[in-house]
Length: 582
Ligand code: ATP
Ligand code: MG
Image 1 (cartoon, helix red, strand yellow):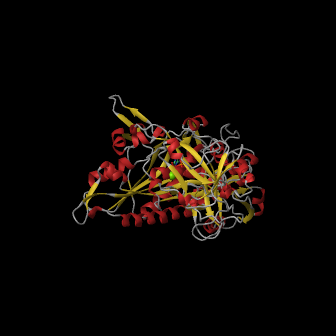
Image 2 (cartoon, protein in one colour):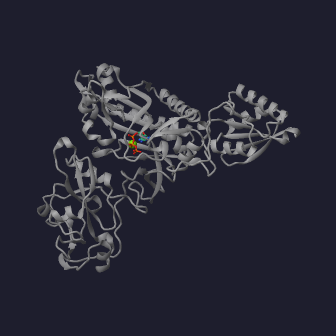
Image 3 (cartoon, rainbow, N blue to C red):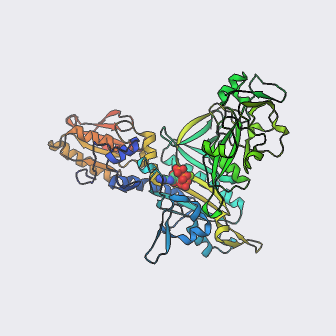
């Protein structure tokens, strides 16, 4: 392609709201154009990269046996009401009406739609398994759309949905999808990790995320330094903690502890490790509007030096039937209103004082003795507390794994990394097929709900993910399979006929060798053309300059900006070799 003919509106201006380098470079490189909050147009370069990424995804999905379909972006609200998500999904779901006042939603994901397809056509186990996927637009009215394509409101997802006659076959497909995703991200030459992810109240290993490692990642991942354990912090587990040396052995007693209302003051007062102290984190559970349940305070007990992990906490109360949508902060006034003394809240008589329905203890505290905890009385604590003496305590893993905690599998050390979620695979089981009545006849002639899996890739998010991992300060650095061009040919001086003639010859040769090449034939200063190459990020630049007279040209690798002199003799053969090699 000729630069002079292509629509590549590069600019030096950085948009004010573009905080991430990927966002800045995609705008400055003329890849995308913002048209609304979280809504972007793809310009020719953006579309070119998007197509390259899409092709890799499509190829591997097809290889795996999945079949491509295309579902309506606009979905009748009725379906979402039937599945129960019309209420539950919250404000991210864009709801609207047509002229006849029929209600619709813009699909933020398409489980309901695809289950309708399965329901209409899959009647017998003989038609299973089936995996259907699409590469299509989604809309989520994100509270804070940000970072350009990273968190848009309108974005493109590859979403696949598989149907099975039993759980084992779903497990098999889930593993196949994990392998397929691995191939996709390896082909894209990304540094990524497959991590355990939150599976809601069901728990288990039914959900994995694919994380591209990058400083700016919004997700925290806990990784083991010894085995391959890696998990989203929302689902990360750890081994039982080791007891510190100084163990505050004491008979059960109430102590006067004036103004000792923080863990730090408490451990100083009793000269003991905060490990032995018990603290409560109080949150407010919010329920969906159809349940008619008012908000209520819920209580989580942890060791004094541990922190609550909110997703685990929500799952813990839902596991015992809360069915809450989310947990929000509780105000001091709300806590005082139920009869508690902030700074002195402990487990003794808590249920009697507050009528609480949900009180959870962290699993690390199971039957722990020698604890120190507040006495539900201003300026008093208990020592020598033995949780084993309490009846009916609910223990769940609700703590956020810390750096330095020990791996539950091998005892290695856990540390944090930052990741960008680019893919997510999930065993849905019968959740949607049950809700929407998608049944089939199994081998024994029984009519039962389909087993289902779903598998997403954030196709448009992959552009910024690649750039966040690779780019430097000058502009885009893509991985080779995702770069808009393999080579930019830059004519140093367009007034020099020899340079122009030679550049055109190389351009034609490379095109006939199926190399994706951009000829920068613009009558501009060399420096401007170089800066555009660095901004756009073709894999290589071939500089046709003065040394052409000695039969030489220069090749610059965008990744490290290393220069290499090449002989003009058999140039296209050499270039094809180089591109094949790297
Ligand atoms: P996130 O936690 O980042 O909000 P999610 O877990 O809600 O994402 P999924 O429902 O798992 O997203 O969707 C599948 C994939 O779609 C995600 O792994 C992500 O790559 C992509 N994705 C989700 N939301 C957005 C968005 N607002 N903009 C761009 N891509 C997105
Ligand atoms: Mg996800």
